[in-house]
View (tube, rainbow, N blue to C red):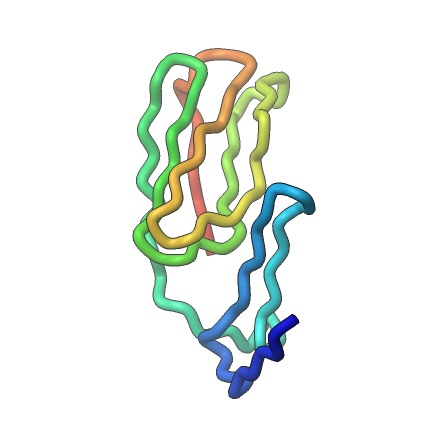
Length: 101
């Protein structure tokens, strides 16, 4: 086991992902004090799928649809820099909005 030191800067976070346990992340400041550059989440729609990608860390990515009957395989998520995720919808992706904080 290695020790990890952080200077507590509000623009830093630690992300841990593996195959034997669920991913997690830790911020080094309270969420209200985080300083992050705004990032644009790229969304590509393909039938009943939405392909998401961000060049920088995207926190609290949220997908919404005006019809409450539409279901998502995931609708609140985080994207690491360069990470791509595909979200499955119960219907065609028309009308889906994508936002992040």
